[in-house]
Image (cartoon, rainbow, N blue to C red; front, top):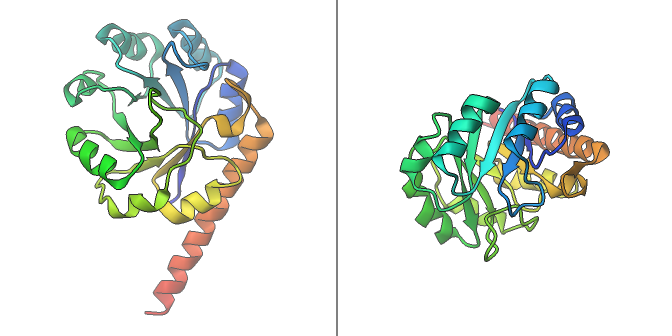
Length: 221
């Protein structure tokens, strides 16, 4: 097992190519008018067609209309949908693509209360709760509460991750994937190649440390 890496908030072809060549597993594009990283369907088409991507593409949406979901699938060819609003499970299923549900977290009860409402989700993305914001806060929550929440789904850890803290995050949570946005940016929507590289190296080093610990534990049995 290794920790997957998603770089979110892609707005430019050059940054999509950077992510695709960096060793990351997925890139996210945001379709929410209130986000500084919001892009259009046409921009997403250009990013996906021009950048010769060999990564999973994820559309980040907030309470989308059915027409938007249809266009993301039929016109952009998106691989996954990531829901950040108040969508019902019934609406999420209409995307006809594997989907993730973002859960905004301040305490363990937030996860326990929200997760059962989305039993068909392929994974849960855990992000920091900030009143009035659907996600992308750049703020970290208490990772220790995840271990007690008993989520029976893959966990994508988000919320304030950056090259300096992702090593500790992977060791603490051992998530299926980590999701970074502002932590590898020069400014909103513009990615930094050095930060992306440092982030990916830190994740790989954490994976190696976990692998070593597991092997040592098995040798002691």
